[in-house]
Length: 365
Image 1 (cartoon, rainbow, N blue to C red):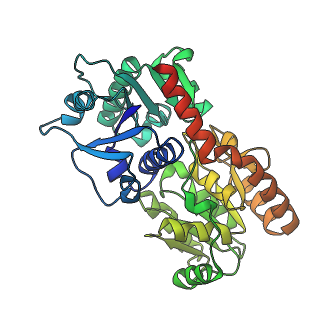
Image 2 (cartoon, one colour; image 1 turned 180 degrees about the horizontal axis):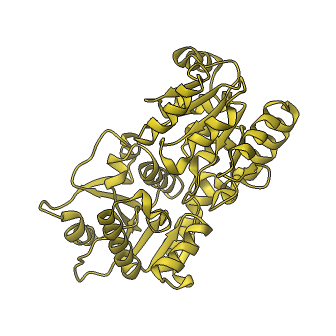
């Protein structure tokens, strides 16, 4: 099979959609090396270079011109003889040639519909238009969770039989055993305390960091936060200053995947009370790291967390506080839940996910 991908996010996104794109192509090329995987974009980058070095993965420079991704990328894939085109981030090209080609699109979430307050009017309209076009044009839609599938049916009015739920995995760094030297180096580089709780993700309203900070106010529990700051950070910072919590909370940026894997592993508890997610990759990362997780009882997070994670009402910082304190003081409970969650998370491993993708590709052909 020859499969073409819209590789814009593969080459240019550092997190979320970029990680999804790179992981998907990495696992397909590893477990199904007999196929050819074409990465279409106007340029490549250093990101995903190790994947591009594989014999069965090839970069294809798309035709030049304004809106080439929308109007020329599909035809470029057809000229290369691709049998399937897979849009990895909710979009598909608008123009196609006469050669037969099957189309798949992955839709990660419809947060812009559920939480319009986080998006400008213009962004909401553009997103909805693109997603609707892709949903109509696609032969099959991949939803990355049952929650996203329900939202696609509700907001895009797509028939259920057109949608397949295929979960995503996480970066291989979280499944590796690091040496004592590496662990020690990360501890020293970032000045990590002996014990701490961890939160990972963009520092924005939806991720709800403020309620974690409120939850540990008045305790001596250290919190490490790894993520890019947005203007919401100012609100969190103001609370920290007002309550003199500066020494209790450490913000880290520019952390590599390998370093992040160590930071997860060393944490006593991972806390992720997000208001809404398409899937919640950080939860999977924590469970693979054998770190017990506290997350929200809403959206898809129970799908990612399984029955041995601890669930909270994200609106209620008192609930978050109580669950953090309970686990912080109970090592045996942390270990028991972490071990069981580690068994649960194996279903998000590379091989079963690659097999589901390949099955879908074969089915639509």
